[in-house]
Length: 98
View: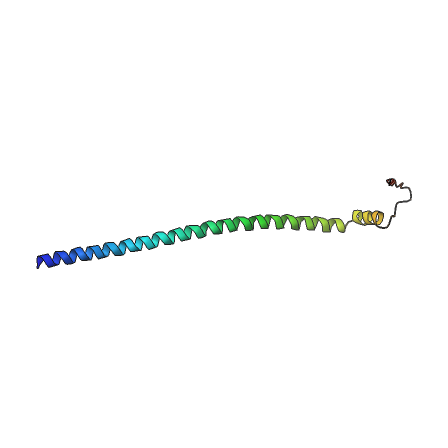
């Protein structure tokens, strides 16, 4: 009987060792997948941060343009360039086309 018990203990220990080894392999694969996803998310985060910075800059430029377009300087510039209007004492020089 003692020989049968030893075999059962050995087979039980081997079974446990196989289960633990299989568990470790599964966990290692999952860790690799998670690390790959983490790297992918980090790269995407950088892309989104860059896009955010660009859009923030663009919004600032639009705000500046809106401020300029609501100014009297803009009205004066448009009157001069589009309509050819000038002040009474202003002299305009035009380029000679060849």
